[in-house]
Amino acid sequence: MACPGELSASLAQAGRAGPLAGDRGDCRPVSAFLGYSGQAWSPAGDKGRFVLPPAFRKAVKESSGGARTLCLSAHAKYDCLMGFGLSRIEELHSELDDEAAAAREMKNADFDRDVRAAQLFGFEQLPFDDSGRFVMPEYLRDLGKVEDGLYFQGSGRFFFVWAPEQLKQMGPEWKSAQAACARLMASAKKGGGE
Figure 1 (cartoon, rainbow, N blue to C red):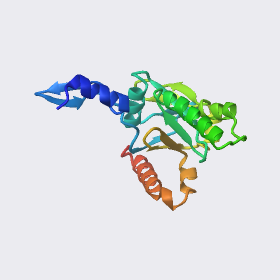
Figure 2: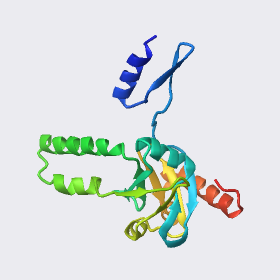
Figure 3: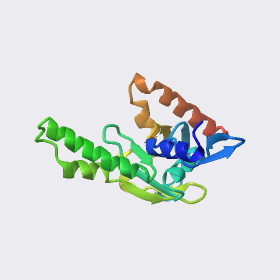
Figure 4: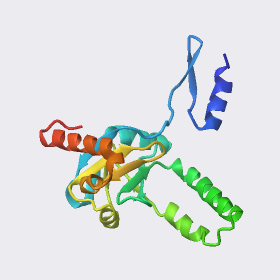
C-alpha cells in the first residue's frame, strides 16, 4: 500500500482527488472535486434571481477552491447554458492550446485562436450566497431562453442549465434528462421540492 503522501500526490497529478486522511491505515479522499452529476430544478425568482441547487452548489464551491463563484456561459452547440467552477479555467487554457495545435497539424487555416478564446472564456463569474442565490444577467437568460426556471443536468466537467421548453425540443438521446426535468418540475408544483 502506498503511503498517504505518495498516493495523494499521484491522485492530485491525475486530477482525481485532494488531500488524503489515514484512518487505521487506510487512505481515503477527504475533499475531492469529482465532477458534476445528478439533476435538479430551480424555479425562477424575482429580477433574474435563481438558486443553485445544493448538490451543484457544493460541487461548484469545491471546484472553486471554497469560493462561492459560479461560472456560467452559453453552450456552444445547444440552446442552453453551461455552468462550472473556477477550476475549469485551467482546462480551458489546455483545451485552447490543444485545438490550436490540432489546427496547425491539420493545416486548418480557418481556425482563429482569438475567436475560439473569446468563445471559451466569455463566461460570467457570478457570486452566490450560502443559500445558492445568484442573479443571472439578462443576456444569459435570453441566450438560454430562460423563463420559468432552470433544470440542472450534471455532465462531468460542467453541468447543463436548461430552460425546460428548450430541453423538450431535444431528440431521444435526451429522454432521460427530459423525464427527470418533468418529474422534478411536477414535484416542485406539488410542494415536494427536489
